Amino acid sequence: MAGQDCLAANEWICGEFVRTRSQELLDAGAEHLWITAASVAAGVLLALPLALLARRWRAAQGPVLGVTTVLYTIPSLALFSLLVPVFGISASVVVTGLTLYSLTILVRNFLAGLDAVPEDAREAARGMGYGPVRLLWEVELPLALPAVMAGVRIATVATISLTTVGSIVGYGGLGNLIKEGMQSFFKAEVLTASVICVVFALVADLLLLGLQRLLTPWTRAAKAAG
Image 1 (cartoon, rainbow, N blue to C red):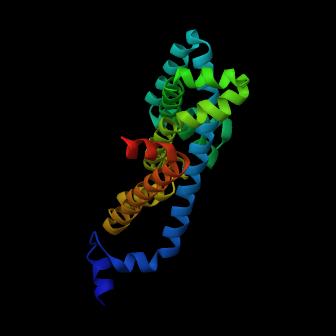
Image 2 (cartoon, one colour):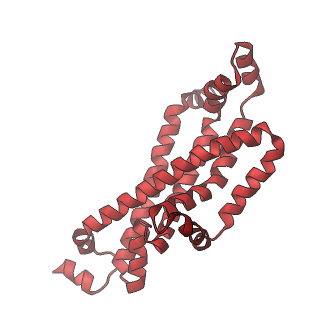
Image 3 (cartoon, rainbow, N blue to C red):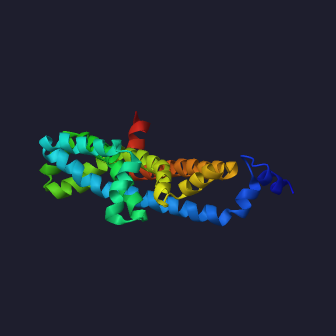
């Protein structure tokens, strides 16, 4: 009875809503996570060559950073509208848009990480016979990982939030529930979906922080030595 009362009273916190709509929440949460993961993964795959291009040819650095920054300033409604004729009303519109948004964060952090690699480390590797490709993958990228992972963490948290905007084309994960709840002023639906988004962001950040620490054990050793 108490559960039904909170629904009838349209309260913000309502356990009965979670119980009766659990499958819908799970489905929306799963969609939210895969859209986020696909967007960030695609962003990383695009950001690395762009960062390498900007570092290799300094004349390209300004245009690369400028274009990625301009992309981030485009309102999501306008960007999705431009992508709909290409992809139709589909999740690809949201994934592509969020991938483009992530580039401004990822490219800058990738570039900052690569620029921070000590020159003496590069020279030592070259002295040992490392070619450009081996130098990149075995020396530069590992040493750039702290900055790279910081960028991935920021991009992931931002993308989890921005995924909700995909509700304007029907692929917003938990954003669909937030939009639906706002239209009907269903308080429990809005609050529950919003809280799950925040939990997703916090958990993702902690998991990526743990992965960063696992991949960069030398940073902990340096702190301990300090």
